Amino acid sequence: MGVGGSITVAVATLLLEGAPDVTDGSSWVNKMIRLPGMTVLDVVDGDDELVITVESTAESVFCRGCGERAEAQDRTPRSVRDLACFGRPVRLVIRQRRWRCRRVWCASKTWTEDLEQLCDTAVLTRRAGAEACRQVGQHARPVAVVAREFGVCWWTVMNATIEHGTPLADDPDRVGPVIKLGVDETSFQAARPGQATRYVTGLVDLDRCRMIDLVRGNAAADLRRWCANADPVWLSGISVVATDLAESYRAGLSPHLDHATRVADPFHVVRVANRCVDKVRRRVQNDTKGHRGRKRDPLFRVRKLLLSGAERLTDDGARRFELGLRAGDPRDEVLGAWLAKEGVRDVYLAENRADAELLLDKTIAGCKADDVAEVRSLGDTLARWRTEILAHHSTGASNGPTEGLNLLVKEVKRCGRGFENFEHYRLRVLLRAGRPVWPHRPSPPILRTRNPHAYA
Ligand SMILES: [Zn+2]
Image 1 (cartoon, rainbow, N blue to C red):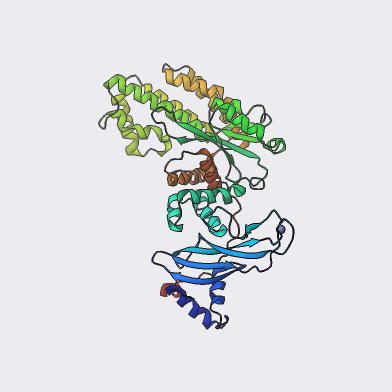
Image 2 (image 1 turned 60 degrees about the vertical axis):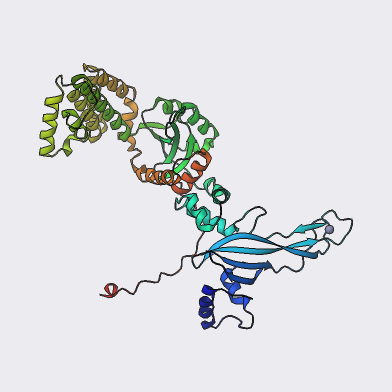
């Protein structure tokens, strides 16, 4: 039996503990490798990997066809990857037994033994597959990087993530009852020649900040289809739904969520107003200068000040803001849009619903009477969503708390460097942001650094 370098250090440790049987060298190595029903035959210290040869210890096996005691035929070696050992990839060479039925008439003839850690086609042991899934799903690490660490190909790791991750993501107990539902779109694939930007719709539990599901597309039909497939009892428990100002979502929530109070998410309402300011600024810029914003143009220089809240302007900022508008906004169009935007923001500063209603109606009336088309259009949008905007004051619902969740989704997106496959994307987002219950992993006691400062 050949025993490799780093293993000898470990055996010394184990010997000091006095536990293993020194006459049988495989007992300590069996202990370390921990594969029940298997025994280690050989450990070879290869250059790039540790090669561990194991075989099963099962001696009496019965035929699946007739129940007769089977006869051992031979063993065939099969290489799979296991968890890394002492920082080195491990190749497990499993000498898998073939059994034979002695009865001539039995249809079973010969078969290869089933091993707990192995499925027929995988090149990863089950525990290595589960670990690969955890690395990709829970820690949002790129599949390619994990694959390189294990010494397998990309698809092996992705398949392991699907195999071990799908039951976690689809676990009906993962979501539980939801009272406040958030619906929000995110881009899935950026536009490219021949294809417009593709969107997905995220459904979020606003109270527990948990991604419930991800739906392909952002059209009314996509959302309606999802609602139709959801458990009606579960849907009936939802009392508030927060969305952005998209008509498609308003239509898609009907009829399955007609019972819930609809709320326009404050962040998105303010964003609509901000976009109006931007639009007017760009047009005025073009009208007065004849080109798009440049570094020295007065309006371009205050573009960020225009979007920040009035109460956040410093004295210097306010001066620059005033100067920029005086120089670049001859007909006060940008100023009008900015005032409308501030009007919208004031609605959320109101302390009660009555005040908010008053402020919103004032803003809507102001917008509708404005000379600038963009501002009038903002007024129309606000009027269409008046009920939903004001519902924020009675329910307190907003997609605000899900900001952290969006960061997790972004992590997945970034590490995937653009997804082609929606199902893969959905699974990985749910594993990262859906808070599945991961299988227990032992947490060893922490060995602390002997840092003198720690004792000071
Ligand atoms: Zn048989």
